[in-house]
Image (cartoon, rainbow over all chains, first blue to last red; front, side):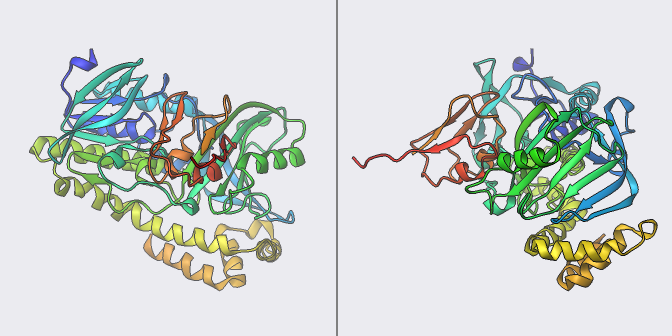
Length: 393
Length: 61
């Protein structure tokens, strides 16, 4: 029984970041338990489920069972309806996160991690200024379990970091208030991502249509907390669906928060690490968090196992993880954050102007680079931010 | 005072991520505001994607 076992590492949260962290802790020889508060790994899905082939392959060979659609094209729709379609350089997928997340947990278990569901963590245990475990309820019964390291992969609603004194609260402008409906009974291009950029439709965010086959799609949107007061994401989405897909049947609905921030500067403390959404690792321009979460989980897991081996779980030792993340992902995210802020300044007229000039490029010559060049011709500030991004890649 | 409309919450955690004083307790399918800690800033109400929160004026005692 897991409550009587001794563990080196406790992972809180069973999303991609948590499962990947547990996998890499176990793979590197330490004893690890993953505690998930919900009854299932992978459910409920709170995600657009889009991922790049290239990103996924850093960690795993894509399994056809996870893939609902393979995407090769993107269409951007401007506020007044200009449609700009172009080929993606690399392909992407719409996943079935229920199956994907479940498999990630299984990989961790195969390496020797223990996975527990229905285990809610309500606080940390301390020994002096070191985190020494967690307390919580399992099927409503109290438990305490000690460890040398706790990894908080507890999502946008993360409290693990706060309990250890890290300020993980998001500012309103850095939180996307999101909602998605999986709809069926519609006709969509099953190989194309559709994005609607418009202040009117989704201020401070965008509407996405991610196909799941030819007749179903995840249709959702996020709006920045800067603009969410007075009109909720749900109202924006209902208006969009009413206009574009009035006869769609809704087979799934979820609300969610997407942290679109720079990664927290401090993601470790004595005996504690944060990964994934909890550490604000989501790409702040796209809102994509699966691959960054897995990367954070992998780096956290590796460092945690190393810390256990060396018998040093101090903040100083664990800050290796922080440094590695900031070197690989964190710096880029600062630049993406800057682009997000620039895009936020574009009015619907600006976006239409950009779309009109891009529409003049023949479709077969359209590349993401050319679209960007047209955009920056219209808005030179964007050029500066984009160059910073590419210079840093 | 902020209250939660019954049977409306989707337990997504958006409000927990924003709450400046950590006064929202969220479980698998339970949510609770700890009113002793709440500072009535209403950010949860403003961020909620599905309008779960309701601000109720309370008379000064």
